[in-house]
Length: 158
Image (cartoon, rainbow, N blue to C red):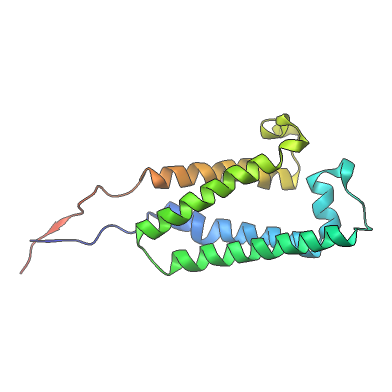
């Protein structure tokens, strides 16, 4: 008897990591590059420079947009290129570390940014609960939640 190939990555993970996250990251790239004043205002209105953005800030935002763009394409293309769960898990570990870094990056705004949802604006929803969701989804994937049991299904050979 032959063993069937391992089950592919479950649908929820494919939807989140092939579509939802790359599109949201691409959206962040668009805002960081084309709507810099709004991006800064949504990040922290009290310290945003207004419409006259300093050159250095504009360059850094353009670099951030480029990183978001690259991340969006890397995730979408690498994960589409394989169903090998080892490759998916490797990328998930890297992105989980980035999730923790992303959450840490907003700490200067104040600790309540992590739980005071009634104060959140559009960018906060992307920076906090969406990152919580992505991190939790990655952890579930790494723990193999929703995957077929190891060993697959035994097939009768003819």
